[in-house]
Image (cartoon, rainbow, N blue to C red; front, top):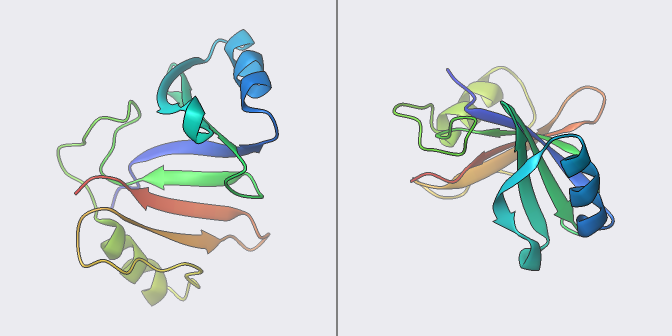
Length: 123
């Protein structure tokens, strides 16, 4: 099973100030929409999402179906398969995928309360 692309999704207070800061570290915007309060930045293989007003905590994010550049992966493990696998392992699913196919997501928390989002955009 492959988790897909990995990024850290940061809950920021000021999208413009955060963008400026991370650009000084060498990151460049490659996705998102400032008018919708989120941007995706990349530096090499490292990806950071900046999200203003969308959630409270910084979140580890896996995107089944995408590679590290946000492009479709040729083969991937569907988010519903990940959800079933983790449930079978005794992991509590905090927000459940409700669709039968295509895009979907679910959220779990590690033992320390850190949120981990499996967010599949690909159909």
